[in-house]
Amino acid sequence: MERILKVYIYQEEEKPIFHQPQLRGIYASEGWFMKLMEENRQFVTKDPQKAHLFYLPYSARQLQMALYVPNSHNMKPLSIFLRDYVNMLASKYPFWNRTHGADHFLVACHDWGPYTLTEHEELTKNTIKALCNADVSQWIFVSGKDVSLPETIMRNPRKFLKGLGGRRVSQRPILAFFAGNNHGRVRPILIKNWSEKDRDMRIYGPLPNKVSRVMSYSQHMKSSKYCICPMGFEVNSPRIVEAIYYECVPVIIADNFIPPLNDVLNWNAFSVIVAENDIPKLKQILLAIPLRQYLIMQTNIKRLKRHFLWNVRPIRYDLFHMILHSIWYSRINQIQIPHPY
Image 1 (cartoon, rainbow, N blue to C red):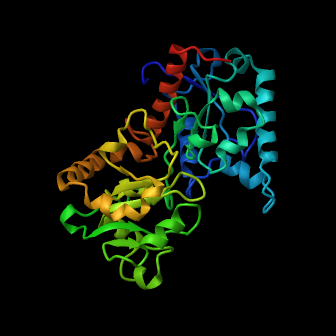
Image 2: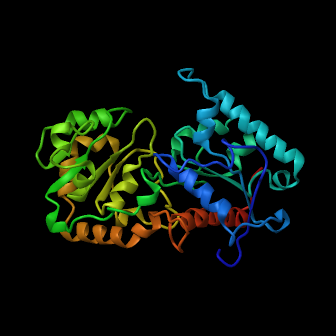
Image 3: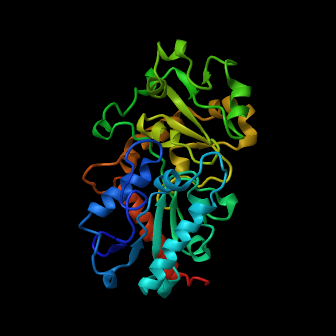
């Protein structure tokens, strides 16, 4: 990839939806990728004739903020906007029509990312979609073609790497930890079964003040063997990457979710995936994992943590390179296997 890949970035359309990434918050992955992609000199080409991939440089978060009418529950204006954008590119350039969008890609971390594509059939079916909301049950995200994008919370870009890491295993007295808002189909079941039921299972809704005054959210993660990562309204959760940052083995509870970067990472080697129906048996499942296996998973997390880090100047094997590689890998597979148009 480093020797061959060239990406053309369309320059059409204006900020903020295009070319103006948001670098903070839970949807920062799409913003950081856009920033680093548009600043890149190694992979970007200004000559579309030399490009292997074509990047649609829009922000799903900015699209939502600019066009969604609050409380309308209507995402169609967002989908129509993207439909018209793609149709404009297809009429102005020959590249979309040449492959029907199969060598084009987008990167969207907002929960609504998949649903804003549905007014354009080729955009939905053919384009390589790097999505945080990697839900195969919706028939929009296609495993093996699309890319599961890691959802990374960015609170302070200048101090992003500060405080990462965790305690050694002997200093992790908590078996499992979760704190967060009680929404979606999974979290109410988790809280009902485990909140304030077991000292080993520190399961909360929003972390209570009386608890956070003694131990902060990040300190809980650093002091826990397992960090519970249940889906919210959608299958994705920023806690998965947070757990990796704090070297806490993530426990993913989200049926139909494709874990991030699964084309190159074996998630069974450093995480636990629990079926939604097995939430009542959660402690039993975790206690059944041999210590030796846990130590291997935790060691693996320390080794692969670099793959989930954003750097102001990209470094080989960091998150920018991993996402771009997954997109490139998807395209290569499509070329090897003829695409049914």
